[in-house]
Length: 489
Image 1 (spheres, rainbow, N blue to C red):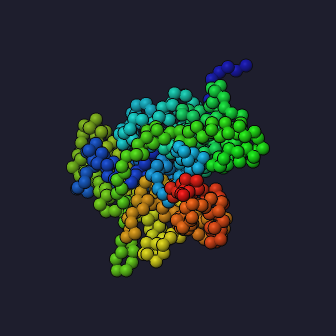
Image 2: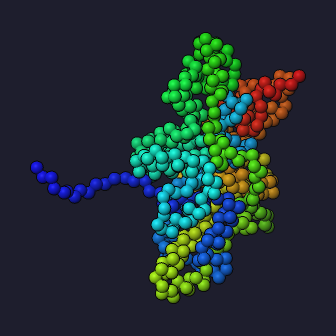
Image 3: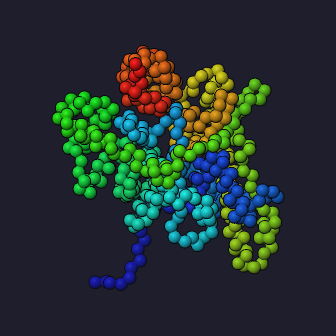
């Protein structure tokens, strides 16, 4: 028997998300004001960065980080989901919780010490709030000590949990497209869902509530007999009476009522009071990132020049690097030059990418901008992604938190993306259907307001056939109360 040392070559897959890649994604999703603050920090921290005496990065792309910036942007790895609430664009909601809250659909500091100062851009410009949601989640992940591959995937997903604690299926699907094994992603999602608070990491309202039930089961807290069945199969009936639900389920009314009361006490937004989710009541000041202007009878779209950063390589320190003989000083200047070249290239790439975005929006919604149409043409993020050769999640990162100013007002960029209505071939956008819905509610008899089902029937008569659940979703997006609360004597 040979017990000697053997040399083996094995091939394995690993998920590697570099600090540079994370920061490039963060820069892409920054709005105008955030980018200005970010470049101000760069200017104060890196002597190689200047606002005058311009020197462009080397033609060959300079350092490896600068050369890879285009690939990193086009890779489509995303950023956080915007927490900006908008009456038209809406969020993941449910009328189940009319009496409480509705449900809607950042990067922490890296662990350990970084030997390479290239990570400064990521570390120093990450979210300053020590209680940010992503940091809160990543700290819990680190304490669990999972396998390295699972931890990398879980850390990535932690950056994409929305302020209410939900994961977007699109982010998970994109990692699958990148070739990350599904068993690693499943383990990462399971890891996050086992963290605090209960319900975090869910991909839907149903899953969020079921996760909270499972946590109560594990804690031996118990819950009413029909609670799990109602969440799993009858969630849409919770906006009605418990007696009606009991009749549909053919179950004892008292037990069903107890289960409904229990379910409504669960938290549909488990992370709303953690980190960024806890400051939603603060006043938000909007700086438009894009401007639609008219010149010689034609509309043009451009990035807001008032907020475009203009940073360059400092000529004095660049010349010092060429002449410096001290090894330690030279290494320091080389690291700073690498950071500066990467930042300048990244900002330029961001500018080019966003200019392509706004150009497409203007082309598809031209009639809206020039005033010849009152509603938007159907145009989805998926369609834009196909035109740009990007993944839909990249489009989502680019539009979240950004605003456009035109002569009709200032709008969140995501307002200009709609979904063709259901399976009908009407070609109506969701915005036009919501306008029709508002008109019906405005003209209803206040003593006998219209139910969601009746509103759906009236919309169908107008050539807009949508389901009752979709009517409920649109009504909630528009901030309109239920039929009972609209009734006046």
